[in-house]
Length: 273
Image (cartoon, rainbow, N blue to C red; front, side):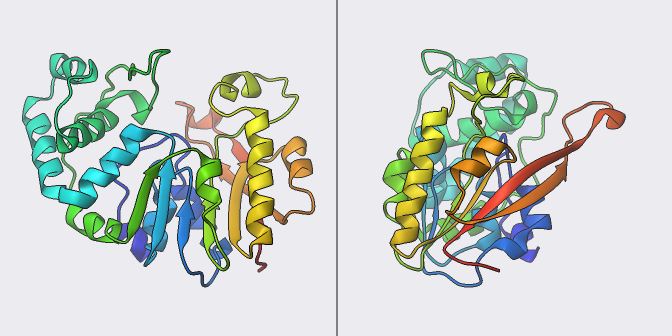
């Protein structure tokens, strides 16, 4: 766990994988050339593995630009966060949320500030692409765990891109490793799960992702895919890789008695353990 402590993820992200690296790190391959992650988010697995060379991408350009800014000049981003630390209040939050633009570093500082003070660390935009999450009850803008200098040094070895997952996975070559953590969407769902996620990641996206994974495998690449423990997902990846059941405790319910076990799966492709 030392790598996770050294490179502490600086964002909170829906579907974050801190639980996964704490309980299932043994599923990562023992060696690989270049690390790829096409659904970067808060980058928990990237920071845990701390690869010598990586290709990181996400369709969220504001997220990627935040990483680019820290890679380029983390001190400027930190100064922007210090400004927010002095100014934070409800009025300031909504003024920043309204989308006042500045330099790359100012925008990165604003992105981290909103992430740390919005409701539940949720990233959500409206139908015109504007961030619209209300203010939360947290006011810790500067954290003791922040080490943007070390993160900047790690990112110096990363190729950062804002692009679709299909364009990212095609760069995975022989003996590269790709960690794939898409939004979970399943087929023929009856409990609202599909309706909730369909606008984010459709079933046809899931099929396209599987097709890219097959191509990756044929090129000699390695991949670890996380997904919902659902019959449609298992059928989709049947014969593609080794399917391993995962479980974790949900922390979403306010009452601990209402918290249950969430079941997911990992699909190991191109390597076995």
